[in-house]
Image (cartoon, rainbow, N blue to C red; front, side, top):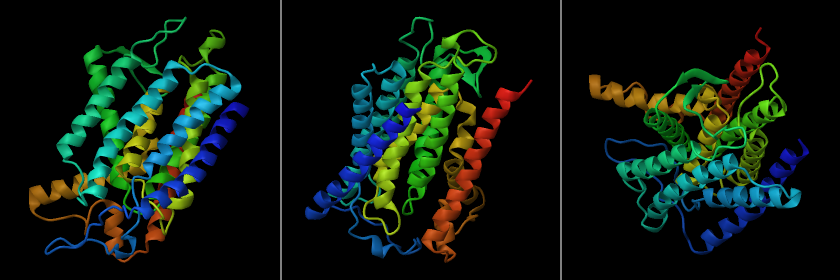
Length: 355
């Protein structure tokens, strides 16, 4: 447990240091994200006060995560694991897709960034390569980082073909990353919600490590590979988000942009798949799922009936249009995320104590 805490402290300190330095660099060069404004027939919440706020804040998060992971293993002189490398790969790979999007928003002042199709293709390449690599690299017991089975808390008994598993993992990754991306519309909203998920995965992975089958074939042990390293990675992500939230909370000094939202979504997806708790992901990422469903409902209703169910999608903008203060929306949505994460952890623990 001390190792996990050390990892989180490393990343929090790095993030607290690197983020303000990055803010100064962007401000010095006058680089900020274009802010969407209301146009004829297309109202948008008034965010005029956010003009000039730098973006691409996901870069300090990524740098903090990678450095903290390396420092933790150097200080303790322990070897990184295949699961840890894969989690880093997915997070950084999706973060680089976000970098391309943020580049257009900042340097070309195109508020919509890269085309949606291009972004989805980039996400698919990273997700499918992650899934394929996760089915390689068996350890001494023949365990792979990922499984051919779909999991709730443990693998279900049905093994699926490799092609089906690749598509399944790609769907999970695409869903949660775009959910985090849609949620990142108010100061601190997505980052704060992600922290709750990372803390929960830290506790979950520590529990799986203590009850792992690598210590002996005992009743109800977990077959998850490298659970301690996954706990370290989750703690590092939580620490990096804590450090960044200090500067991202309202009024934000920096936005994390697609660089951050896609990277955080990738980290959550990596933890869900590598800890074999994939079907609990809709609860661990509960707020992101709700936000995504609000967009689906809005688009579906408009296409089918010509009417909108919300004043504006995603859901947090609907409440902005109703006149709710930004900080009120953020805190109440954090509460919703907290309830969802608590429900996921309750299901996880209930499975353990079930007779």
